[in-house]
Length: 122
Image 1 (cartoon, one colour):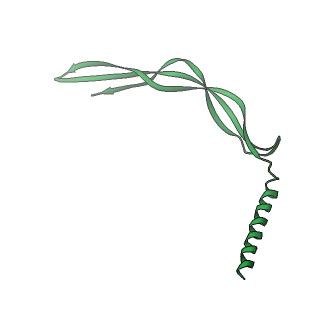
Image 2 (cartoon, helix red, strand yellow; image 1 turned 180 degrees about the horizontal axis):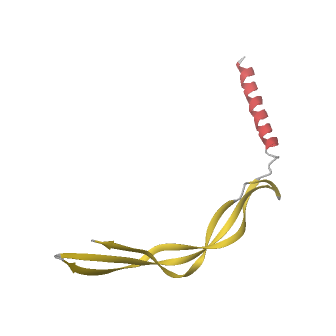
Image 3 (cartoon, rainbow, N blue to C red; image 1 turned 30 degrees about the horizontal axis):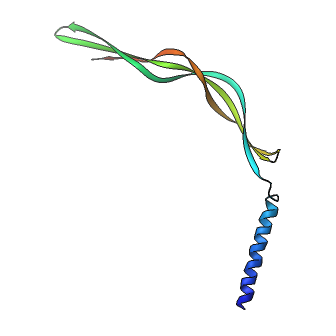
């Protein structure tokens, strides 16, 4: 009786492996690729650097009024706007496409601009 059970398990395992082999297209592999389509260019501002402070003081009726102006410089960046589609391939045939997503890719630096400009008064 135990011999029949082990034989049945071997046959079931063999059937399962055969089914997987057939279901996977007899060994054909799936690959992915990204198809990018450039749709525009936008400007972005990088991190602040070279921060400077300018302070002024005024005396008024036994009080001193202090104003501080803060300003930094930021890199002006060019960014490419790209629609990206993820395609699944079986061999050379496209079998599915995901809806496009919008991403931005850095396209270089385009100078420096003032940023983080603000006043503080006390």
